[in-house]
Image (cartoon, rainbow, N blue to C red):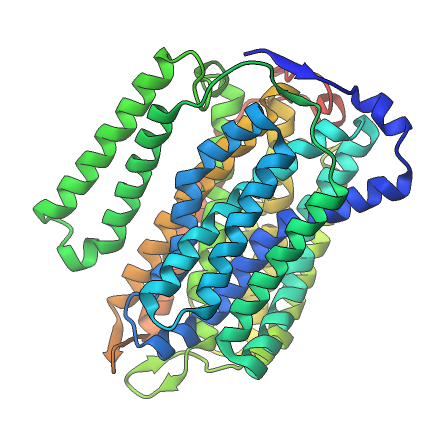
Length: 488
């Protein structure tokens, strides 16, 4: 797989002012973190959406974007390598805006889900945004820019709930949906104006359509089966058939990838132990944390109705105020982790962060009935969350070469998305076992919330244990512009 580079990054940087570099970072920060912001806004709005549309299938409001994003991600990442990362960023952002706009004007739940599904294509901007950072900045900017992009999750975590609370309390869930559409349009404009095209791309190659369709079909089939398993019956022929079909498609994908000249995710890269172990550990750890919002947001925002719903019944603004210390912890941890990654083994940072989430949410399984209890649980888990989200892109940089960066980021985002979808869907299933359907809307009892938290705790614990599989690699400063080499 050959690469061409039309403008050397160091030479390009000498001709670009610091102000211009800052504008590029801001544009990429907005684009990358909008994925997390939209996810946060969606989670906070889902309780109102469920009640308005009187649906028991509210899980798909958040999962549709994950599902379609996961399906199209390999094609978008490969397209970025072939046709240019900026060009594909604009395509993904444009499609995301179209989906957000459709969702904002939808008058029925089916149309809303179609819009949310189309908007899921925007998820590809995250791995491509991290990859283009390495291409267009010199070594001294790569670590700073990557740390800012990753640390921005803290700003989203802190400001997102206040923004969502204001939108939800004053304008309802429609206000949230319209804000998503406007924000995506701003992202498109900023990328178009400020972000230069990456000088690194494949000089030749073609799209692996067969492999992409097999991978997408396998992942989609598995996720859909998990989502419908409770209704179909976990031992039913329909559930088993979908799972079997998904497994066959994924096995066929692996066979195809070994034989095609231009695979979506080169086996030579994914077979290396430092790469596949990092992908596995980070995907399970970060994917499980992304899924916890399903439980927490429904817990605090669902109404309290005796014998029907045992949510805390907070408003969006009250939720933002109470959880602000948690958001602050995420920011502190993310910034500190970016600084520490040059001095401390990234494996240690991931393990400690993941272990803190286990401790925090483990406490929450028993103490989640008041504001102080939510804060006590969240401060511990929030610090761990900040560490995990900040160290994931750093670990990817450490184990791959610059030419592999976009593909590795895409593979990690894909795997993390699958983990998040499965854990989220299982959380809905677990909670619904102790819930009540009233006037077409699914509500949850306290036992359901408790079991949902236990599910997340178990998955986070698994992510912590998987860190032990990861071998040592070069530190961030050594890996910024050199091939990854295993050292332990």
